[in-house]
Amino acid sequence: RGRPTSHRQFGEDVAILAGDGLYAEAFRHVLGEQRGDPARVLAAVTELAAATGVTGMVGGQYVDVTGVQGDLRRLHELKTGRLIRVSVEGVLLLSADAVPEPYRRFASELGVLFQIVDDILDVTGSDEDLGKPSGSDERHGKRTYVSEFGLDQARRLAGESHAAARSALAEAAPSGAPELERLTDFIATRSS
Image 1 (cartoon, one colour):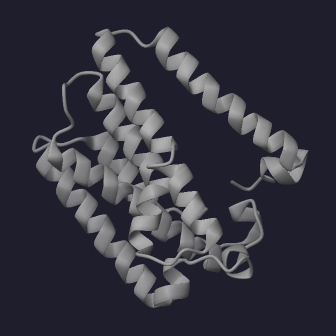
Image 2: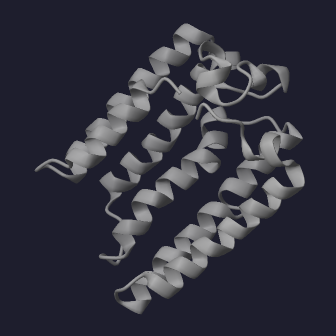
């Protein structure tokens, strides 16, 4: 945030290569450095591959760039939402055979919340804060919560998503999860 994106600073070709390299590095790091039961590490890596592949981010990006119409929430659950979701679920899979349903709901809602707020910031944020030109989603004809529902309704949906994420987290961790609570609140209130 507040700095030029990689493709602006170094060119699209280098940015694509950096993304490919980071993707491979993520798998190398998890497989080479993550301690624990090999079956659980493999489950977490499998979830990471699914989240980044055609049933996750790549599939969501395809729907987005081809202009296929469909449910906006589902689109964003596949894109950024799926990456955020795997960051929660992958950690849980390292210590359990399955992700408890309340954590699944929390992680999914957290991803959608991030995207709604990101759509709002694209309209309300400054170029400097965003690290990209504000209004770029509209200029590129992207479907966003703001373009489909308007700014006020998008803000209301963000509030509902924040409440749903906090509710699911409270169910998942009845004794509290301060770091995840702070992260959820940060995502809801971020300004860049």
